[in-house]
Length: 593
Image (cartoon, rainbow, N blue to C red; front, side, top):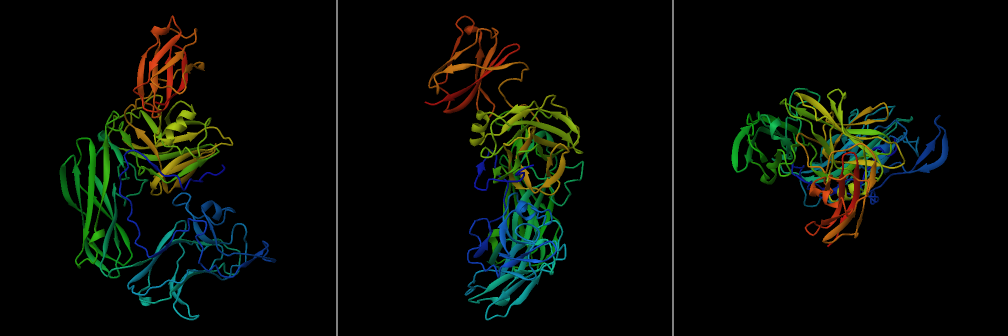
C-alpha cells in the first residue's frame, strides 16, 4: 500500500462534541519538536559521515549524520522500525539502516544551540528517544558542557524495544550557567546498525515540590485494552443505554525536583447541575521526580439521564505545593441518546479534533474497539470523518462491524464517494453508513471499521484525533488483512440508534435528474423523466445526511416538473433524491441566496 500512514499536518478540523482534556502545554523556555523543515537551524550536526557498501567499504561520499523524517522514512529499509506515534510525527535521527546510509557512524553527535540559564535554577531536560539498541549499536548518552571542551555524561540511555521512551534529566548542577550546551551521542558500534531518534526536546524550570494532574480520562487506563467483558477504555461519547458505573483515571506527574509522598487524588462529577463525589483513588505512597503514574478511581455511580458529565480530578500531597496551578484538570463525557439532539446514540473514543489522518491508495480497514456491557442494543450504523484534503471523489468505501476476533458480523452497502460527500467533510460533517441488518448486540467487544475497497491511484484517508493505547485502534491492510495497531485514534464511531439519512438504498438503475436554476435561490424547478413512476416521494438531504425537505411526486405526474421552495435553506450543497418503487434518481442541489 502506498502512503498508508501519510498525513496532513496543517489540516485541523473542529468536529462536534469536542471536549476531553488534553495534556497541559509544556512551559518550556527552550523546546524543539522537529516538525518544521528548518528545525535543525542552530543545531550542530557534527562532522559528516562516509557512506559504505554493505561489506563496509568506504565510497568516498560524505553525508550528514542526522536527518529529519517520520516513521516511514526511518523504516524505509525495514531495519529501523520507529513507532509511528503520533501518526506522521517527525523527529531527528541518526539512521544507519536506510538511504543515504549505511554509513560510518561510529561516533555521531547532535548538539543544541547555546542555552543561557542565567537566573534559572532547578532546570530539567525532557525529551523522548527511540533506541532499541539492535544490530550492534552502542549505548547512546546525553552529555552537557558549560565551558571549554569538557563534556560530562548526564544520562546513559537504556535500550527499550518497540516504543518511544520519555526521559527526564536533572540539570540543576548547571543552575545559572550562561552558556550550556547539550548533545546526544550515538554509535553504530563500528558496524552496520539500526538507528537512534530524538524528539520533543524541552528545558523547563522545576519547583521543588510540584504535583501535576496532566489529564483525566474516562475509563481505567491501567487495564489492558485486550481485556474482554469490561468497559475500561476511554470514551468521549457513550450511549446512555451502555453507561455502567463510571471509572476515571487521572494521570499524575511529579513535576518537581523532590520525591513526593502520600499523594491523594480525588474526582468529582457533575451531570445537568447535580454533583457527585468526591471519589478517592488509592493513596500514591511515593513518586520520584519526573515520574508519571495513573490513579484509577472507581466511582460506583451510574448515570441515569443524558447530558454532559464534567469530571474534575485533583491531587494533593503531604508537602506544601510550590505550584497550585496544575493540581487539577477537567474533562467531559457526553451521554448520548437517539435523535439529533442526543447525538444519535454515538459511541466514540476519539477526542473530536482531527490533527492527522491514516489511509492510502490500497485496500485497508481502519477500526476501533468498542465495549458493549449491556445486551439488547442494535448496531444501526457507523460514522466516519474522512480527511477531505486527501480523499478523492470516486473511491469506494463501506462500514463493517466485526467481533473481538475480527470475524465479520455486518456491513453497509458500498458507497462511491461523491463531490457532495467531500463538500460535507469540509464543513466538518462525518459520513454515516447504515448497517444492513442492524444486528442486536450481546455483551462483549466489537470492532467498528471503515473499509477502502478499491485499490487505485487515488487516496482515502480517515482523520485521527487523540492518542490510542496499544490494542484500541487498528488498521488491517491488503487482501490478507495484515493487522497493525495504531497509536492514534481514528474518527470511526458506532451508532446504536438510527441516524436521519435521506432514503433507504434501492437496488436497480440510478439516473441523474436535471434541475434549474443552478445555483438555486428561493425556488428550484426539477425536471422528472416521463418513465419515472408516479406516486413516489422526494427528499432534499444536507451534507450530514439529514432530510431537510420532503414531499410527494404525485403532483408532477402530468407536468413532468416539480417546484421546490428553497428559500428557507441555508447556503450550501444538498442532494435531491427522488424515490419510486424500483428507481432512485439523484441530483446535486446548490443553494446560494
